[in-house]
Amino acid sequence: MKISSVDTKRHLSRVLLTLAVLVAGLQANAWTVFEKYQPKVLVSDPYLELRTGPGRGYPIFYVAGQGDEVVMLKRRTDWFKVRTPRDKEGWVHISEMQHTLDLDGEQIDFGALGLNDFTKRRWEMGFNGGDFNGASSLSGYLGYALTPNITVQLEGTQILGDFSDGVMASANILMYPFPKWRLSPYFTIGTGIIKTQPQTTIVAAEDREDEIAHAGVGANLYLSDRFMLRMEYKRHTVLTSRDDNEEIDQWKAGFSIFF
Image (tube, rainbow, N blue to C red; front, side, top):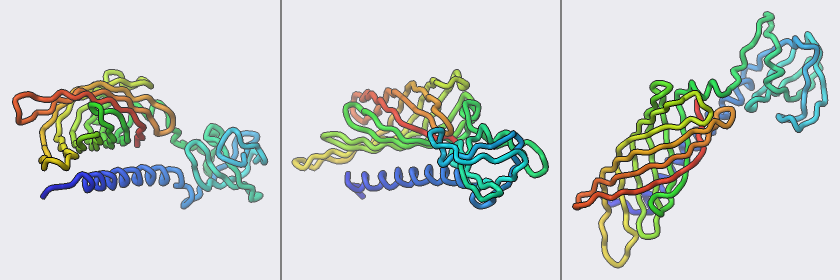
């Protein structure tokens, strides 16, 4: 069965959309976990400042006093929406919430994410775009860290060129020599399959499917919370059935999350 370029684009678009929805779902679940349970905490500092919105730019409109029991309603990254005994609802930064106590008088771990969590990540996923030998490329990937220094990754890429389109699937190994750095470089090797689909209407050119191998370098830059910026260069070798193999350069950059 021959798959048209249009069908391939639609199929990959659906896959990428599904991954995007999954990312959004993971973030939404992490941010709204308190909406169901609404735990209560005690103010241990002399006061707790409530803002009108989840950000430093929003004004302080109410102050809860020491010993007040406040209810946590929801979370948005590093901000918590709380309700005071007088039914005042506002937003409090995690740095202040870390000084509250549970109803038994014990310190609470709010699980603030930072560079240490980035270095200990297990799963990560992301999207990136770039240049594939002069053609545009769009990729999505899912990775799992076997150790802090070694990550395995599955990646799917769509290639959109002037004369031909293509799809590529690969399995990769990433090696991090300095996993604790905020800007963490890595080396990557991998293999996969690339399918090229000519856009010609004059001659009935056939789709071509070849094995592909690559080596490359890249870096992850930790931004904040669960987010990081990824930049990568790969040198692909297309193992064709003809006499000469093809060498292809790929540059790409994008954003990822870890969990």
